[in-house]
Amino acid sequence: MAALGALVKKVWSVRRFVVLLCAPLALVPVLLSLPPKEGRCLYVILLMALYWCTEALPLAVTALLPIVLFPFLGILPSNKVCPQYFLDTNFLFLSGLIMASAIEEWNLHRRIALRVLMLVGVQPARLILGMMLTTSFLSMWLSNTASTAMMLPIANAILKSLFGEKDTSKDMNRENEENQASLQQNKLYTVPTEMQFLASTEDKDLTEEKEVASDTLSDLKKEEEYKTNIWKGFLISIPYAASIGGTATLTGTAPNLILLGQLKSYFPECDVVNFGSWFMFAFPLMLIFLLLGWLWISILYGGINLRGWRTKKSNIRADAEARAREVIKEDYQKLGPTKFAEQAIFFFFCMFAIMLFSRDPKFIPGWASLFAPGFISDAVTGITIVIILFFFPSQKPSFRWWFDLKAPNTETQPLLTWRKAQETVPWNIILLLGGGFAMAKGCEESGLSVWIGGRLHPLEGVPPPVAVILITIVIALFTEFASNTATIIIFLPVLAELAIRLKVNPLYLMIPGTIGCSYAFMLPVSTPPNSIAFSSGHLMVKDMARTGLLMNLMGVLLLSLAMNTWAKSIFQLGTFPAWANIHAENATSFLAAVENVTLSALNKI
Image (cartoon, helix red, strand yellow):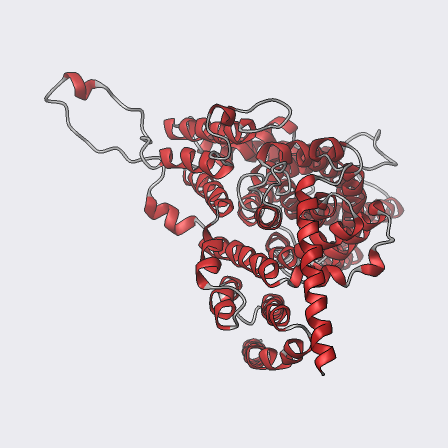
């Protein structure tokens, strides 16, 4: 196995080297087939997309390529490229990452998770619901990967208390063979450790023993199958809930912030998307999808038995649920009483969410209206709150020092230190966001987005509701094999131009594309949460494919429903807005100029 692993690593390293060298040469025809500036920009975008999809370079390193290639190729000067890596959208995301770091530092997320599980109960279907609710709530504020990594150990502890150690299928088969051999030899059935049966002491006839043994083996097989299914249902529900929960807030996942940043780049006058308006749209969608996903997983993996839901619960399962309840209670008690730091973090977390939501909720004037228009953004709000974390004390302050000169002057630790923030904040995501914004700026300045829009004539006859469904399906399938961040960076400029061609509100196509990037449920490689759950060794690819197929379908249909109902009133999707009309007029004039230049060049030839 070691030799095979070494061979795989060697082949992978060779493949990466080949992609790094051959990709720039293979894309040279792109430079020759388009107008000069648009061709050079498309060359850079395709090169980055190839590196992102193959991971020939680290994602964050690939995101830095515009800083080098745009100035060298004459697409964009460096003083316009570099600021894209530090837009206010990046700082909004940074504030969310720092808040998440403080929550993890004081284990507040674990206390919330265990408390929710204590409230929902320990029956398998209820526990799956509790796991999904908790994971989705945490994923709204923490990263999807961190939420999954935190919840999986809790799930494993509960599962072990319910069923004992999980055996592999090979071990189960070997155990069944040993049980059958014991039955043939002794005419008695074995008592497995998970199943506390009462041994009968009365004498029975040989035929009765055989019947009991046969029934017990059948019950044992059903119990093992039930155990395996519930274990799979638990593990698969957590990454799915993390992906769904991340869509509910702007800071929940990177594609949401990329949408916000590219809107500011393409449509500077667009101000309808902020933390509050996004939450009002995405939170109900998240709740509905989470509930339907829970029902599907519970039915598929035996948490809810539609045929035998009225049957009496066996003593075995009742005992197992009692043990699980004790495990959850014991883990919660290990956390001890609520500390002052946890209370402070919870207070600032609530302030963080409330102030972001109430800054400009659109349906009523927000608190930002008290200041100069356009000066206060979501980034200002988020950074204001997280700065306080770096000096607010983690222990209850004492005012004795002010009145007693002999009192010791001991320094108190803040809620979050900069060293901790450096270690826990994923800075590579900030660079990845910046690379996406730089790419969008290059598309706009070079005219590539207009050129792409001019090639979308065949799609002008597609009804907008059908376009929403098709876009979501295509992007959801594409993101099964590529990073969701890279996917949305590539697709958003195309969707913006397509919306202008269709004469519909650009948000009507861009929002489904953004959320569709998070609906990657079918493969272990689709998202890091899927990979983490799959690495536990209890899930198979076919389990994820079977479960994720219907999850993807539900996501597409629910998103289409949301875009054609409550999203229309929140984002004014029923009209073609003035901020998009200005961009459309500029794009038309630019396209006409490009066509004139091309025709004049052809005439000279």
